Length: 135
Image (cartoon, rainbow, N blue to C red; front, side):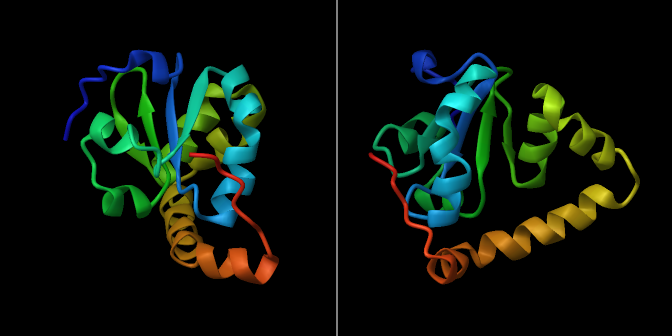
């Protein structure tokens, strides 16, 4: 895994959020909020962008498993750990941060996240959520 970010201009002050640009759910909830995340110091990229795989050292298959965040400290976070980190950095997500501190909540959220993530394409179809990612 390559965590030596050569393209630091692509990494926001707090990190790079990598999402599945072909997924309607991911595009709507992450991709279409690019300006919001940039306001808080994150940059955003669809995993299908040609520079993402070489930058991260992760395969497309690995990146497809869940949302990923490459922090400014060069740590790779995914799934529930992504949400935990985000909730610690964005002030209005503080309630989520506090909830994650309650014993057993984070593992339960992880199960819920995995349930949704593995069904996100079906949810996209049923809810008619279209990807608008440009890569």
